[in-house]
Image (cartoon, rainbow, N blue to C red):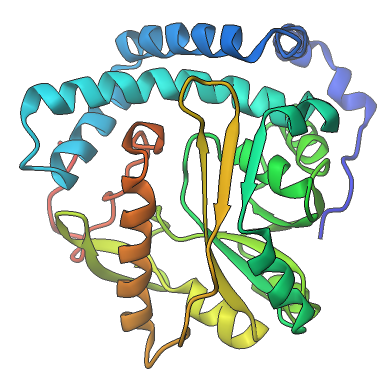
Length: 308
């Protein structure tokens, strides 16, 4: 488990200077009022939509696949709004990594913390069952004002970004566990810790079942929540984070533990999990990460791509 960010002189190599310059600029922008940041982020998102054609295609295609009955003009408006929200997410991350606790607390709402505390008091670990909402990075920081947990993450390929994300996330976490380290996750849960978990992205064919997700009948869906809950003897609590209306803060909600989970088998648990994921995403469609190629893995490798 990663418990601190490791700085080395190699991070100061000239090849990293442009990145450090950008980091310094974002660090300065973190001092701006939140609404100014969000206005800038929305403008960045609109620009990105014009420049990043492949990402725009992916998001548009996801919306077409998930909501085929939505009128085209409504989908187009949702796509534009989603890119604006994606631009704002840059500042969500900046704020999560660099804001002081006092400033976080001025801009946060936290609902349902009693469900976490009751579960831990009963000697059980907590699996926060989240979705990839765009302000998710800030959600972890807000939750950390109540209780530090264990983050599950993918180590970054860039050494500077790995240092920054570990340093930033450790402001609200006890430690970070690589997403494939199941043994460490189970160990933490059996010690009545809190683990973040998401099952709403396409992680490939391994340990996945093909089940409905919105209007797509055969989306590759991982079954790790069942494994973690069983081996870790933990409770699963749905978790949601969003930017408040008016862009004046962040709100997270933790729901009561799921009853009878794990259930009879992994398939029924995955179906139940996808229904919860759909419900959470539906709370704020524009603030979901539609840019991810959610349906890239097909039931048969010979099946044509849904993104062509």
